[in-house]
Image 1 (tube, rainbow, N blue to C red):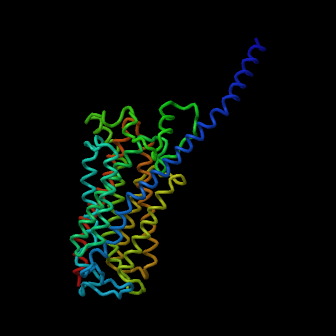
Image 2: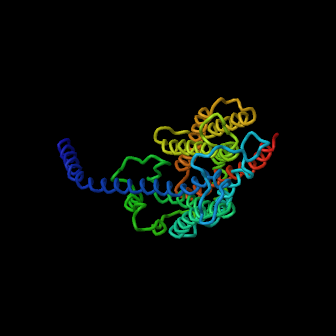
Image 3: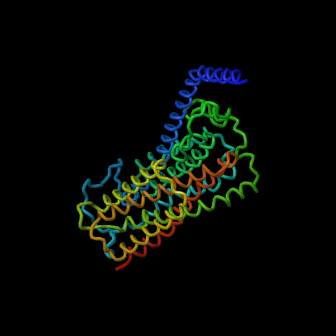
Length: 392
């Protein structure tokens, strides 16, 4: 009996030794598909946000620029700050940069509100095409604009591109469960894994086959309204903190940045505004790329910290107690870190806690959070700008 068992054990071991070399190509194939998906989603996210970010960073210039015939700009490379409102110490434009924010976010809000109701019925390829055309159109309109109105139309196109792209690409991750990159860490590759996981690994994002052809079972097209409502109520634990985080940070960005004007520096007002936006985006980029180093389960903590930033900078706008612009630079960078961390950890937690059946809908539904917070902040920033700029 013992000898027979030992022979069977040796036979099993030898079979494992024989099969190991055969499994190695499968592992390499799956690793290659994984990295294709990593690069693909990273590029999609980078390109999707590009027009949106550029328009917000150029908001001060869009509202203050003057054009001549032939689209030649009067902008001096090193302009001397000249107050637009002599009765105010804030050097205000006649219109708040929150106007650009609203043009850049309200179309996105409409898209995200409607997306969970039926956008999934439209194939991914046409959605990506429309998003790309709108992005290109936004830059063309703004570049050749002779008026603020035409520039704002270009900003609207950027908003359509960004909103449609974001909800599309986040929903797309549901078809690639092992490749969230910034949302989940990939599990160790197991060659004896489930057949579905192996099929997903062999259909890379950057391949020629569209995800709508993958016949993924239990997609969100099969969810009833009651199921969607139940899933949405469960998401509120993450949606509400993300709304608050984005409300606070965009109230700072588009309501206070323009008013945080320091005259004791060599930077012009427009240059100061661009530095604020650049440092904010740098913080967002860094924190959205840091998920593998730091996971945050309780995102409401980030909302509290962001509101503290808002209160602190609002008091400084009123009292002007900060001695120089470099302290504001540090705060703005920290603000971006908080905002990016809130975004990526929210979707990371949802990706981990939702079932395959609900994940596509959950991703699309949660997209509304940041857009809703940004829209509310823009609406409140407009009257705040008018009030402060008319102070004597």
